[in-house]
Image (cartoon, rainbow, N blue to C red; front, side, top):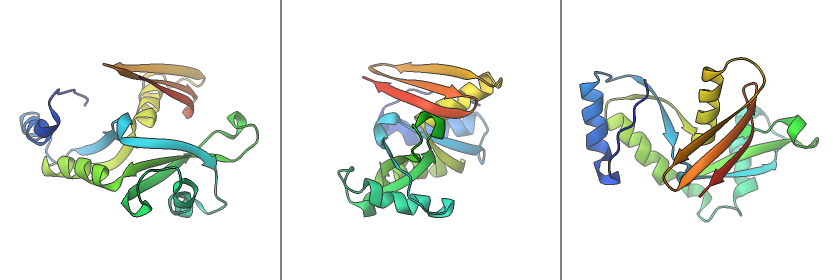
Length: 166
């Protein structure tokens, strides 16, 4: 189920709680999508670590790229396609301020939703593309909103390129 409810930042909790009640979706499995202006992405050489250690290892790759302390950051990452990186082993690191992520998590939980995961806008758009067109091949989606947009290119179900516009 997807809906858009416009409201001011200070009204989010009440609007979301009212919607959860009226739509009768309390306890619904929920994927939270972070707004694109609430996180940063950096392409870095992939640290030579096991998958379960990647987020921790990425901290040291991005520590000088973010303008806040590592202790105040939530950091994750996803693989960049090898065939698109000229033979380099690249990962896209995603960084957000912990306080911002916690605010969104608290908002969803207070409204009675069952938070399953947190995605970034680019990967959420990739997921929309795959659901709309499950046939393998290249595809693109352009997401526009007032004053900003994101263009995403995928091949099969892999994100190859994204560009934000203001």
